[in-house]
Every structure is written in C-alpha cells, then in structure tokens.
Image (spheres, rainbow, N blue to C red):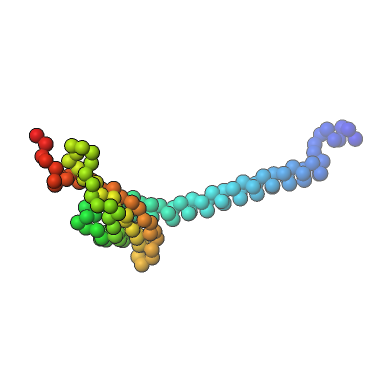
Length: 136
C-alpha cells in the first residue's frame, strides 16, 4: 500500500487542491470585477473633471467684476457661471500696483440637458490697480 501511495495523489487530495484553487480564482475574479467597476466610475467622471478644470482656467482670465455671469461651450458640455464679490477690491501690500478681489463662483456643468456638476468655488482675482501711481 505504501508503494501505491507514493506514485500519485489520492482522489481526496485532488479534490482538496481543486477546492483551494477554485476559492483563489473566485477571489481573483471578484477583485478584478470590483476594479473594473471602479474604472468605469472614474471614466464616467473624467469629462466632468476636464470640464471643471477648463472652466476654472477660463475664469482665471475673465474679469469677474466686469463679467460676473456667463456661459461657454466646451466639447459636448456647457459651463455656466455666476460670480458674487465677497469683499470689495483691496490693494496689495504697500507699494503694490495690484488690487485683489475675492469672488464666490457658482458653476454649473451640463452635458446636453443633464446637469453633471454644480460646485461652488472661491476665486481670488488680481488686476492692475488703476489708482496706483505708475512705477518709474
């Protein structure tokens, strides 16, 4: 009997090995499925993130004092904004030729007619101070 046992596996050993292998494969399949779901969620949020980044870039170059509300089209999105000054414009430190203004900006990003994001951000803008004496 000992010679026969040394030549191969018993049926019980093979079944135990298959059960362990199946458990490991099911765990790996579950892990891969959850990673794929997370990747789908990230891919769905990518256009929203890109549109918001683009909108903030546009707002950096827009004088919100002169144009407090507006709308732009970007790719397949429409981005609306409305800015409210939180404080009156302030001059920079002594000798500064720049004025700063703090705005609260409500953004709305639409894809078609569907609202995909509506964050509120605070934007500090700086511009040359018209009251400053020109530097020589």
